Length: 40
View 1 (tube, one colour):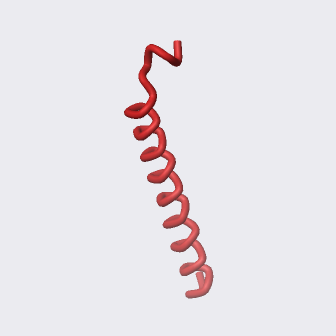
View 2 (cartoon, helix red, strand yellow):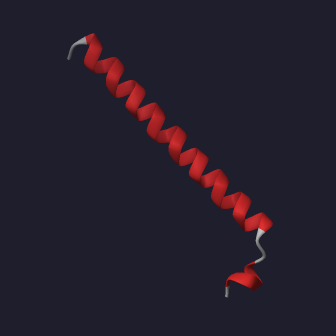
């Protein structure tokens, strides 16, 4: 594996984890801001 491919995979993996972390945070924020009673 070339260093370029390694860096590309590292960056893509990092961005995927960052996206997942951001989505998880947004979900938690929505859970806090929006009561569960209004969703049902």
